[in-house]
Amino acid sequence: MGRTSVLLVIAAASFLVIFNGVADALKEDSQVFQVCGKVLCQDCTEGWNEWVTGAKPIKGCKVSITCLDDRSRVVHYASDLTDDAGEFEVSVKKYTNGKELKPQNCFLRLVSSPDPVCNIATDFAGGKTGVKLHRPAVVYRDIVKYVLGPFYYSTPMCDEPDTSIVDSNDSKESNY
Image (cartoon, rainbow, N blue to C red):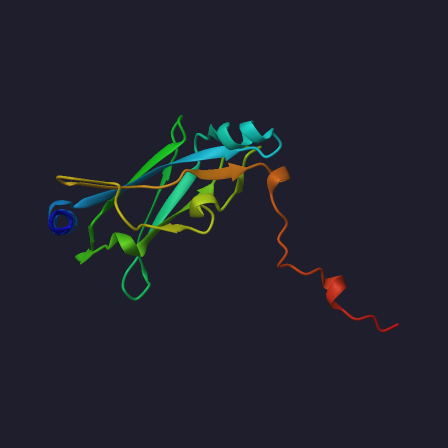
């Protein structure tokens, strides 16, 4: 029992040292942080296996990153287009107009798809409403990278109807 307690204390101390190292790297070394991910087309008209595993990359999709200051004002906006593999990578300078951008105040979302068939944004992984940056996936020397997604577009046939819109005829009472 005593040996297990010592190992737990050593593991906790090691975690604190590593966590402080990551925090220091985020604060000092990096002047830029990167956000990357992938955008795919998921077709619900296919069979289950094709729908789950057969998503195809979409070239030319536009994604955007918006960063806010502490008073929720937009201080940075950038966008990128996906490549042949459906991948994007946006680099953001950590300092804009003399102020530090905090990655946790930034969010990334889908903007548009050039695909004439697969152009309905879904909210898988937060692509439609936007996903906030939380923890970087890579912290190495002066590289801080957030890896998001994959995000998905779908076909119009797969789009769910918006049930929050009430038909105006249903909401009116008849005077007859």
